[in-house]
Length: 255
Image 1: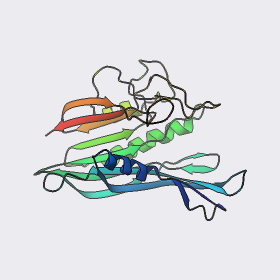
Image 2 (image 1 turned 60 degrees about the vertical axis):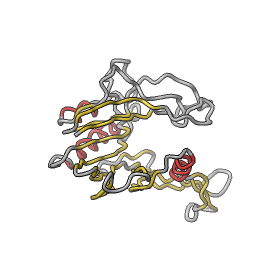
Image 3 (image 1 turned 30 degrees about the vertical axis):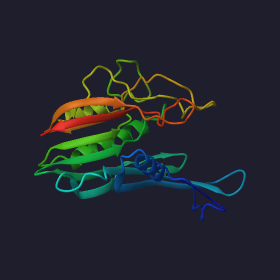
């Protein structure tokens, strides 16, 4: 969420609330979703050279289809968490976290976890160590689960593991999660998911079309059968025609 104000202490005027924009577009498309939990992570306000301040609040969110009701589907034991390992860049903290919930469908249940791990920073091995520590903490937190588990998110770790060349996210984290007993649901070849455009790269132009070469958007499972897994592209009005620089991943499971 982007906000502005006269100073860093009162930057509360909303410019863009991306969560509300997403919910509004989903409702307009006839597939309304409700918010289960929002994990507020980084919240930084900095002075602008032109005057005033710009504030960005980094959030992870877990959503649920609004048209599915108990007993067909409901959630319990919802928790938002922050990882102990936090990366610091330029003196600013960049925390990451996860959201966990028990999903009930009929008389069956499983634990769903979504996360967004720290991304590697080229030339800074601390960022990679922080990512590994976050994944290790997540595995540790789930070690005693008595129900099946699904872990989904942007892991910033290339599960292709060098097949397409050593990209910036070529870390051991994805392999570490698999070694802990979680199956990578994607089995149809390399399946890269990032980037559709290099909007984070400098100098401009920021919107540079590009073919994905890393698979960092992953779904892991334990104790469930994978029926299918596929990619989905979110259309959008940006110059490249995509609403995100990542491909989405949809997995279908069966008890």
